Length: 588
Image (cartoon, rainbow, N blue to C red; front, side, top):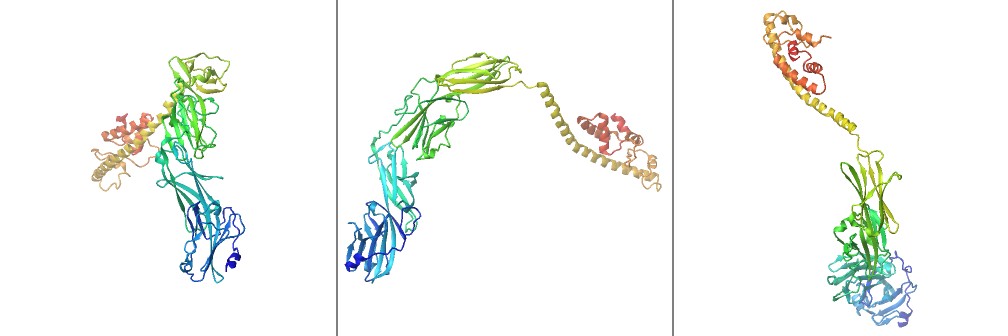
């Protein structure tokens, strides 16, 4: 029987596994920490009686299987790949069907494990398990001092056993992490405080077939209550930081234009930007104006930060590549110090910035072009130039950091044009700003345009407002005309009974009727008959009604630009087309 166990060779029914991603031909994945109790589960409760169990291992990169442990109801044998800690969970596996293997794995124990159950020489079940070993490193080692940068590093062997590794802070708060080649998945907490103590959780997400969707491991972190790390906590009490810096950048820019404040070229954990105001001799007046921690995702802002933002491509603050975009005002010049922190190291870059601004001021006799600049300590010269270089300008200074030139008013073609203020630094760099001076507007033409063009609007508005008025007048007039006409017809019929069926067909008959307030209006077209002739034939009239109607209509039309006669005729045409001569004579 012993020789049978020694000579038993498990025939491989699957391909040899390599360490590349994508290999998932296994029944289960187990992730274990090195040196921690681990169980590879293998059970079959349907098996009873005379059964044998063989545990074998295929190490990473190996082609052959090695015996770990073999047992039957009569005997147990440990193979060459066995470890002192290896044993079956249940010695009575024949009765319980539990064939699980227990041991304390090391890094070398990762690989594929085969659980082969046989009965009377016949294979009943085979289960392949991938064992991955998790390694966790905490840096710096305990005790962890305050203000140090905590690094939590986790890796799995083989790496293809996991799709990803994530970290959570105490309380289950997700942490930012990054996978680094040859290192593993790293999570950081810069500038740790006592409140950062607690149980952190490393979570491994297995790849392929697995009975568990997640393997979670606690990692305890304790921050020293009393001691602080020697990590350089820079306050910049002077112009010079307490660690090596890059060369000083001396430069200038225009006000209200975007300017890049560069930082050290290093992939850091967090960045701090300090500022010393311009033309200030107090070197202790250094201010922290921006702080960004890419691991915690936290930002400290100040009043000065309103004009600052983290720069985009080619920089990437979330990945640790820092620089700033500054949109400065005149007073935002001065010394800027950008400190980038990486683990226990710090790097610094200083920029001395001058800001240039031009402005104009006017009076009744002159125009003054002013040029202002800050951080005068690095300025060599400043001057104004006209686009016509042959013309020399007179310049004067209203105080430090200011230079002006005066132009007589009014501005003529000889003085209009572009004026340039140029500031030269002591390192030879120059910056300039252009002020355009234009000729005054031609007042006569502009006033004419302003009067003529809008004058149409009130006239059109009045005309539109007049339409409802005329319509109302027409309605009243027609009603009145109908009423009077009916009375006239009745009188005409009473005098000339049966002689005229339609007074409009025989107007001569109507003229014989007494004119008791009646009005005759001939609406029938008369060819080229004019209004006044028809009015003269009308006889008696009612001048009050026509006077009010014609006055309103004519006044509105005159306001729109028509002459009085035209307005009167147009009003008459709108109303009926024919009116009495008495009304016209009265109106005129």
